[in-house]
Length: 308
Length: 275
Image (cartoon, rainbow over all chains, first blue to last red; front, side, top):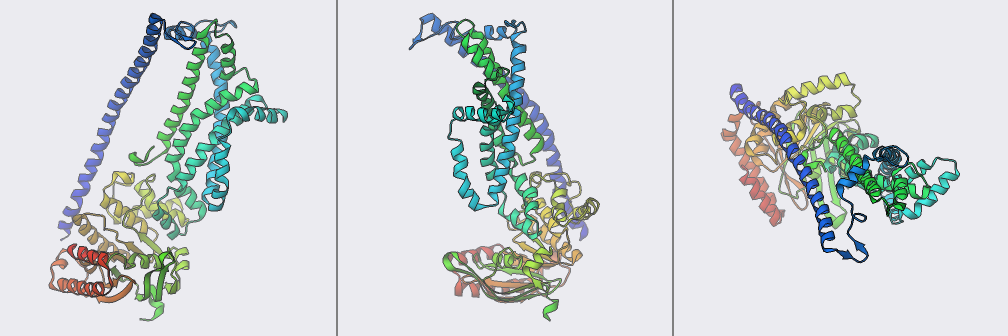
């Protein structure tokens, strides 16, 4: 009798164990293949963008294209290779443009990172408060939404004046502006994530006589992580944009915003400078985004279909 | 049977949902003794899941009394007297099998060493050795449900509440897990209240089958299952097994034809076909 039961029982388990390990090895081979195809895709897209840019430029110059006052020439649309080449030429200060821009990017990255951290923490706390009180949720949510309808360009000078008046450094004001753009998506998504826990999982926690605190940290927060990281991805790029825009009214020269303002004035004589700055700003945003993706891979342990 | 030795004692229990005034439960009286395996069976909407939730203090009754281990249901919940298993395993995706089983132990303040030892015993009990580090999505439905059972038993609750725990599984897995559950029940010597749609499952597992009818949900009969213990694959072939199945079915039909609507009748037929 027992022997019959064991055979009955062991076989499916062993089979599923084999399926499990097989699936993993397939997955890793799959991963290599997917990585390779992603790399190829990236190169393909870059090549296509290059072809589009240069093709439009060639076409515009050949037919003498005019769109309103916009004409296509080396001033409005420089060659991509000349933009990249510009990065390696020295500036008036003496350093290579790439070095200057990377220093500016690092400065802006600091503002954005501090702003992102503050905004994420505030957004997370707001969500935790709101998930525990339906009354507060109904009362406060409209104002949180309203805060984002005010253009950042209108808020930024006030923040700079207020915080500057309190003796805080200019870059900190910029970080606060970046935080203003960051906290909103984090608050909204985290709230949704905290509410996404399975109602029966909540009942289980109740049956273990779990405290609110335990329910929050052992169920609600882990359940919210995929939502949280979706918000972080939006916020990571928003915080860079916020920092660059914040630098303008703050009169900060050390960051990418300062560089953009500066090169804007010399655009007529050297358009490559501004284009190169835009390129570096984009790369900064992309690296911030990829950092979040990496953190998500390391932290979020969910079924593959649950990962946003 | 004196009231003090009952694990569960229900007196004149009723539950009316305020929305729409649906009477989910009406005048339920039931005593469950330690070590019993009691199944609740009935058509959809007869309130058997609600009854289970009332016992577990997840739903509050609107009338009557629930006494569990001589305490109020709420006190019993706070004392961690309940182990609960739902139809879906409801495992935490972000936790491994071992950590899922350890969850109630963490709530109970067990230290790391005791937790590890206990999880090891549970893994052995539900025969999931080698899968401790797997995540739920890497397991089959039957294995997930075994993890869920291990989690419910890990902190030695005096009462196990199971809400159609095998309802979502295929027939073969279901029969295998029925055997597993009986073996675990014998070893853990716990009391089990088991909600099911399947007549044969109820008869095979239980010491008593409580038959309910819908609208309003009430107990229409109790069938004592006097099949010998321990039960095994041959039990399902015994003449007495078929007699008991027929008895439960007839009681279901009597309750169903009197009070159940069309939906209830369909469910009843489905339950019979499940045999």
